[in-house]
Image (cartoon, rainbow, N blue to C red; front, side, top):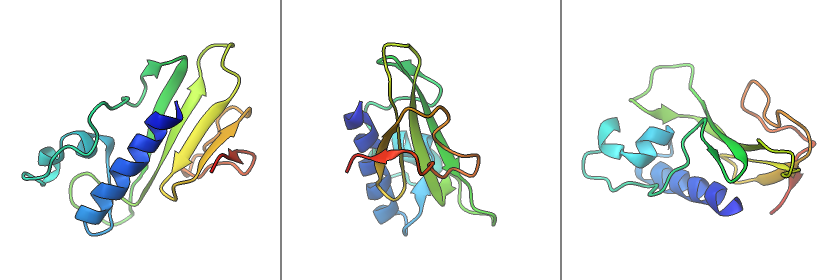
Amino acid sequence: MISHIRAVLDAEAAYAVDNGGRFGDLECLIAPDGCGRPKARPYLERPIRSGEERYGYQWRFMPRRPMEPTPVGDIEGFAIVAEPSRRANRHGFAADQSGRICATDVPSVVLADGTIRRECRTLH
């Protein structure tokens, strides 16, 4: 579970280094050539798609889009959320562009603006 979240965080960090500090949509991490980076290798090999259920969790990638126009796929921030889809899983998990990974029992751990609720306990 946490390894999948870390994989997205690592991919976003590498993408930002290669993209002038700007993060990328999930699709840009998977296929950077579609986002104007024809020579770039994929940053994320085995992605969990937003909206996908895997390992008993519903996954969401929530990009925070900038107010001003930007190149295709560029975002200013993001949150990754894994919410339990079965009762057997008690905790939800989330992470954002800061690299913070947290766990919570609170549903809807990410607010509408893409920030993570304070109630989410930091794991590292």
